Image 1: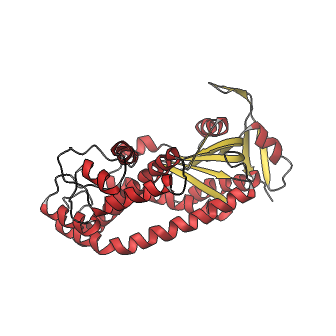
Image 2: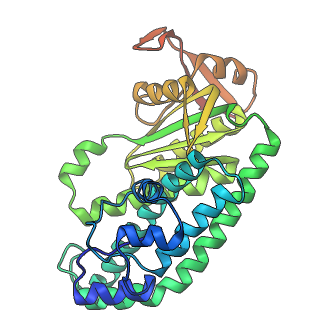
Image 3: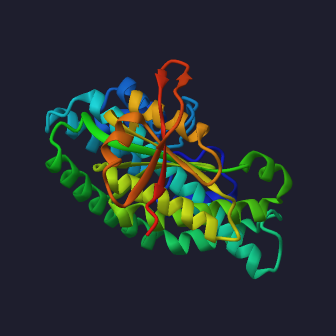
Length: 328
């Protein structure tokens, strides 16, 4: 369910076009949907929205229908209420980013059309008109993308049924010197660099059998079923950055082992080790864990060099390998 708190006339027009007219308080929307108010509030918080005053008529008929659908999942389809809240939390986080990205991109485009800086004041009326025009197409697109990713997730599960604790190679790649550059670049140049970094990641990771788990500013986290594919991704990312005059060098860390999948993310010692290795790697290089290095050392496509043992806080001593592409 979605509320628009104290909207201006312009925002109110968009909110009503997308959601319907506000007609219910928090208590009334729960009663209308036949849902316990405490459960409705848990879903609202899981979506990432702030509390709404008890006397404010902020909710619409759309909110009623969503609450009824959530209630049907639990009562009719016997879904665990905790599972519903978990999915709600993931959906809220993901779509909040989609919404922010859409508003930012639309505002930037309007600024370009006016030949104004992207950080200049936005014409609210123009922005609302553009978002209202794009909303139906984007809603259809989101449904399609969700279905495609659902099929892909089911295929991964079929390939390795114990998906809750599965063995994967996890990688992190980050931009070298990003903190210093973020202080020196203006907002437009910084955004262009991050956008290019993301484009390179999406160009090379899925094409080599990997899955992007998340982008974290100047860092990308990815996962791959097979170690050699992960090694190929790591080298491809390093090489792509070396060729691109608009990007700084990157460095990569890889580790293989059991991972815990939770809310679309991955956790566990393997993830922690890969994250530590990327911080140890020198600019323009890839480091891999000892276990992964042993698996890759006889692969003729790669060259590996053992480093001295290092002590990692919370992990212990380990001996990483430097990974390179084999020279012809």
